[in-house]
Image (cartoon, rainbow, N blue to C red; front, side):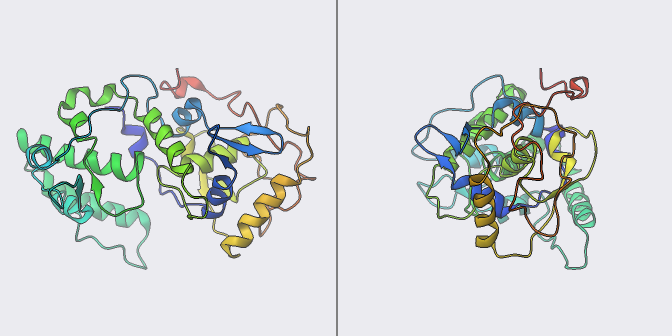
Length: 305
């Protein structure tokens, strides 16, 4: 279905300050970030290089039903929360996949936590076959699509895209990456004082790390890894959120007009980061990278073409 590389991405820690600063520079009239040097947006190329999700194919769209009671019962074996609702409690979905009882212990590493979830899920799903296996696959896909690709802030999981999962053989023909980007744009247009962004926020972080190399607070994890989201480890800043956001805005506003550059950068241009975010761009050389993927080995990324 084309989700393999996306589902193998590592733990993604949100850089809340960077996301909020970018959101506050979003121009809802032209659907782009407004910077002193002009407008910039994440593109379909950024999506496919960062996530490996396909951006060509059938559009992720369909009919909105007045009632979703029949479809989830038939395809998922689960019921919606209310008569005219399209929502299913997330815990009920997770319970159906055998992972509801797994708790992340304070002393437990993320790798051990995920391994335990996988073990419990395999024990639940191993005996399923035929119609039951298809039902479990749809449960898993609706969880991934509605919590990650088309994520929202609420806890329940929407079934509005469930009709696209009825024929499992056609799921891989949809442009899920394009839908991810459209959903993210729609989320950025919400009230700017709301902290965070619905949708797949790591795309914004990696986009900023590649195109605005003097921003952010990340460190390289795996040189040359693809998709590009696998290359970064997101580090936490101990300063207050508002202070971090203000510093990012100040850095963007103080960038001299005309200093945007198209020259090439090394894969890991964070050579001037210290214990806190930068407030002065004067020592950073290239500030804006318009062509950050020059020199990438596209043979290792067949989905890019």
